[in-house]
Amino acid sequence: MDNHQFLRRPGDDRAARWSASLGREALFALDVVREATRLTMAMKDETAEGTITKTDASPVTITDFAVQALVAARLARDFPDDALVAEEDATALRQASARGLRTRVASMVRRALPDANTEQVLDWIDRRGGTGPRFWVLDPIDGTKGLLRGGQYVVALALVVKGVVRVGIVGCPRLSVAGGLAAPLNAGAAGGGGTALAVLDRGAWWFPSSGDRVPLSVSARADPAHARVLCSYEVQHGDEDRASRTLRALGGEEPPIRMDSQAKHVVLAAGEADLLWRFPPDMHFHEAIWDCAAGSLLIEEAGGRVTDLAGRALDFTAGRRLLRNHGLLASNGTLHEAGLAAVRQAG
Ligand code: AMP
Ligand code: MG
Image (cartoon, rainbow, N blue to C red):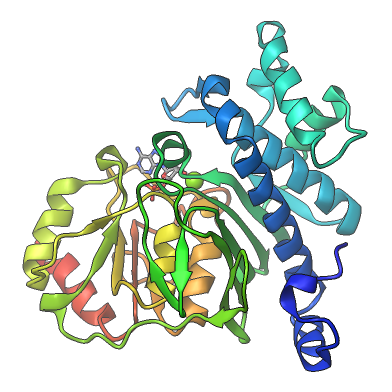
């Protein structure tokens, strides 16, 4: 494992003690997500040609597969007994016709793990484990469409123990946070990038790619009319009519901020927005746990609140999807009841 120099200046014992106090899991997750995020940036020119379409019509790239392999390999090394629940699997890569694709994924993984062979890489991607009492949950690339479009994307990793998210990490190569405030950059890779970390009952912080960490803290905004609302960039990821009705019921006057991935959760945790919602595209749709776990702890540890659209706590004991929840409402806390009331009123 790295020696976490990014957490401290040389000779700074207090900072060293602080980082050690976060616990082994948080330090592991910070290291691996930063390593994975760097890999996605190194691969940005090759990613687009290495894209295939999944059965649900969403895209997956060689970068998604390579990040999943890398994180699974690091977990096998440092936490061999822990289960991993991750978005992708290697079925498509194992097809005879996908030889070129799997070769490219393996060579990408070798940038971080020089001795890895293709078979190993496929096995890491398929490293499984159910959602038992203790598991990690990974979205190797959350916001693949954003990655391809030049918008936001993140690497999201969380540790869930007995249904409670204990550690959440979101690596954000295209998000910039200046002076503790997130400046959402949805277009272009101009943002300095950084990593957001939350540890249960300890807090949430932003680690810029260079510079000191800053604590994340939600806004104090209490006026629904001026609420800044985050939602998916992709209109087909939600029910747009219901979102518009809810904004009207809230009395919101600001146009929603459209952004890909759990970069939204980081922006809310940093106090640069006040509400975040996901209205499922249909009544049968349930959120994937890898789209919510890390980001929800970030928001809560920054002082905010996260529930589903009915005000229920997110239940991470239901499997790969939040089968006992419907949609998502996250807020700075102050505006949560107003948000839930608007959802109810909009119907
Ligand atoms: P966002 O950019 O916030 O919409 O989040 C991206 C995530 O939305 C992806 O990682 C998918 O898991 C999820 N997603 C993909 N298709 C849909 C869909 N039709 N409805 C809702 N969510 C979706
Ligand atoms: Mg995702």
